[in-house]
Length: 382
Image (cartoon, rainbow, N blue to C red; front, side, top):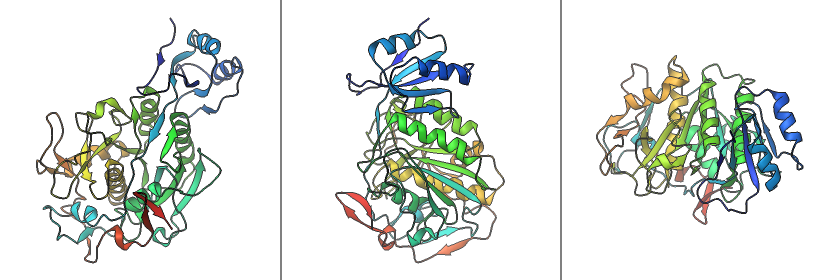
């Protein structure tokens, strides 16, 4: 039986790049043999998430591969996007440690462990690793987009800041690792993003992260079995994965990786505890987090990633249990405008946990960071 060919919605019919996923029982020799059948060189070879590769294929090469008994499925390469951002988010941190909404909340209450001993991978546009807010805890570890190991957009830096910056991060002591998979326009091909995910599984095994590892993925694309398979493998490898529900005001079950059940899918809320008008919804969403004036589920997601790192630093818990724990700690039924078949859970950092807590009374929002400016609607590192 021929392997299925998957063409995600919106992909250019003329696109000739494909992701080829081998069957689980295929061995490395089979992968090498299959790659050898194609005229062009493979762009990427995947060996950690699953056995496979991505490459440009002619029509005859595609036909041959579809009939190869070692092939599970073939998917056309598509483009994933991160949402644009803006810098001033004066309420997000305060909201996740206060039971009531309000513009007057300026206190963030948290345990001083603050994610110490954890590591966080940020799959995005990169991180401005030398910024003082990261205190030397940020590293640029791999680049699957270009030859510039920097964040030319600011999207990834903003995400990293929400996760673990000194002043405005949820987990202020986590180590931050930049895996660049999006360009300056916050776009990247699924083949390169898969390469980044594959790299994380391999690299994480070499890191000293005694409290655990979390991964942030603030990108989305039309439903992609390859991306979902990669997301599953990251979680099965023992790492927590938070993903954005998406920003199209539609059912998240049509978007990857938000429709992958093993990922922790995050929707966005506004300051008065309403669902953000742009946030996706539906049964695929696990929790909601602050995302308006932070500007998208892309920025709601790092609140959850940071919270996961924070909890790993605080408690002895398996990464596979974190999403359920975060959901159980969330405020229930406090949000308005939540569609049917969608959870009404707003994250909290668990001030009820019996630990010593530190109270920040000087919290004024990312506007006080001084780590960037708004350029063209996007956070730009300077």
